[in-house]
Length: 278
Image (cartoon, rainbow, N blue to C red; front, side, top):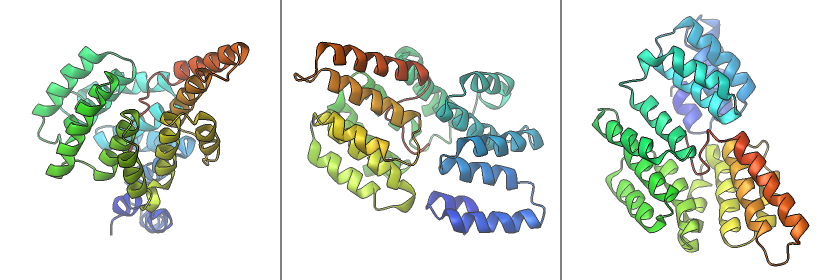
């Protein structure tokens, strides 16, 4: 089994052992594999260090640039992200990976016309592999059209396109926002069966608690995560906003909760709250 497959399955110790063996034999791919492993473990400083080295060694490697872009985005290194995308524009224009990445940024920033145009371009690329369908669903969610978004995600699951765990994670959020709590529970229970997705499952459960009007329980669950990524902080901000609107919240507390939520959203405005499995 190759290291990337081990990483995808959450077999991080096995992957690390294999990568160490490759390092002893002088494989040039070692910095990339280590960076990918750290990024999937959400150890972003270590991931960035390795991926910067990988890009330096092979500047034409799209996968390395894409991994580094994800690590920058998820850790809030926005200036570094802009510089990276500017320097490597020659790799981006015909790549489904980067088209998908840019659509995620456009959705996060609320530039829905740009996201629509990006989705149309992504559909035309040969290596789309269901990415455009996922982005269509997220665009519909951004417009609060949750029932239509669920239909699109159901369609993707029926055609076996894309990453099933990513699709079901997004559908769990969509279902919770739509008040379909039974489907949300089924999806996050499915996701938590996989070792590499345990943390994602906890995030989905926190999202369900928020939509059920239990924001304090949701924040408690998020605080138990080993570390918070951008999506976690954005969900935390949503929990603060919901808590602010509870009838029992005092005026002073309401203002403070909304101030904290706005501060968090500003800090992570390149990320999309319901983006999982990148």
